[in-house]
Length: 193
Image (cartoon, rainbow, N blue to C red):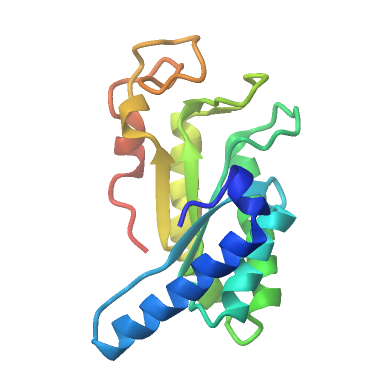
């Protein structure tokens, strides 16, 4: 479930979606079908935004088993030009604390296995164009994720994973940085939880 922008403010829609997810999970359990529910949500550099956290709170209130939470570790909208790897780590550590409050019966290791991260590779579509995730940031995040036993690492989007437009930003088909083709894909290759 990728829930962002205006969808975060639609409480009735959030509630209906989570009730539907709970029904689907029950059906899958009754029919011995595997099903993983992953929530992709916006974050700050210190944890989920309050409206994103409310999505998870509502899910739990509706009996949803939250399997994975993937913060989008970009578009922080704070006008800060900070290291994107370090920002991702602090966002994930903040999410970890939030999940510990939501799910006090789970161990730290269990909570890390519920966490993922979605990066925007290269130059961001942030309005002031100051966020840049490098290939080294991706490599370092893979090392961090492996050390914690995280569930998922992903990025937006495969068609951006090339260096065909260095210096540009907010492009759907290139990263805006100097890189070899599929450099981010190679950096994350072999990630397993």
